[in-house]
Length: 626
Image (cartoon, rainbow, N blue to C red; front, side, top):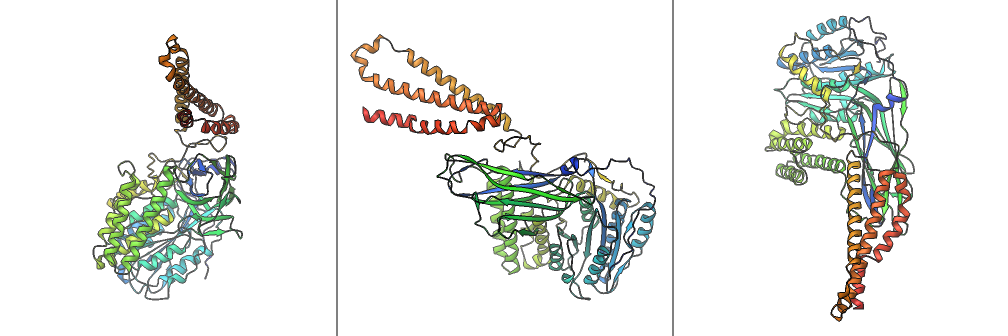
């Protein structure tokens, strides 16, 4: 059955909050999501492969957020009796206190049967007292009918009368195996994110992982017996109460003739669903929701076509465009053109990838090695699994400095903890399996997930999640001291802690060959200064050499060396011309990128001449004629 008794309007709230202006469809609303691009600026004319990193990042500045419809589906079967049901009550009390009258909450419990304790209702001050009483009355008994609980929760979602502009999520918690009512994998989840929480050592991690993976954007979270649930729940709330984009999609379109396809999956977005155009020219990735300060990274594998017969040019390789909805309004970005300069002097594969690209490729390799190690452990090949994790550790330590990169330090800690849980098969079955599942869920979704009671692994957290976690720890110590409820907008965090590469600064309206990193202008100024200095010094050397001819050269003693003097003078002239030309180009780039682009044909002709008249060619000809 589908419920349709959700509250349509919030009763009068006692909460006071300054009014905020309504955000329009243009301007700031578009800026809630930003597209960053990382790739090599120059590539060879020969056919070769390139990797392009596209990053969608949610704004971390003060902005409106979507109202949340949260359905909590909680296991209250007999195995939850005692300490576990008390931890559930404390965690749910924290959730109730953090939600505001912009948000709605429904609580569903399941044991032998599923029960909806209340419809979706706005969490006002009056509602908080009633919801708190419902949670305090929870008792554990009966079997585990997880399918019934999830079906009831989805019926609440499907029956909403007030849905436009609101974000909906389901959180499902269980400590055991389903033993009544059928298989929860069969429940239709549509495009609703389902965040699953396994509690304790007797849960079915395979089932809960499958449910989360089946949903759009959901993650599997593993909570150890000795841990509290309030912390993991708070991390989830730190994201759900900062949703700034819904139905987020990214479309990547390649240019025919410039890029060919050598991989079946040429756009890698983890486990997010993809739709490929019938002609294979474009791929659309669906991400669902995006939190404030959260990022989605996509690797695009490009096979650049053979252009060795063409003159140098700027190749348009693909277009990127994103769209999302917010407060029932649809927002679409302008198409973003990705251009790579094709040059004959660039050696295929010689240029080092930009650091963000290398970091993302390394992280994906890291996740693949964990996946391979898990497969080996599932096949009872524990030694092979440990060796695979050791291989992953060496790859990180050899290529990255963990002291300078907090993300690498956390990846190494993740490997260390997982390896410890693979020392024995029984230990892996009890704790290693859910730890590996939550790690892979986090990497595949690029979203935070709880790994047992792991310390030191805080991948994909946002500043608001860190704040909520601290509030949860305080609430565990003193439940009578209520945490502050979420505001109706996402405030700027007091301290932004971002373990991922920072977003580039705002781009000006310039041609694509201008570097996009903050230090590019300083490096280009230094490059121009050095080239000008080289031109001046080479000119001074040429003038000096041309002026040192004295009467001594008229004697027979110096006749033998005069031809070498002329050769040296010619070589110095070539160096002077070359340095001057390069200095002119660099100064042109500083003055105007478009002016520099107009110099490209002239630069190409000069470089061809200098290749033939280079010092090596000159010395070789001098040697042969002598």
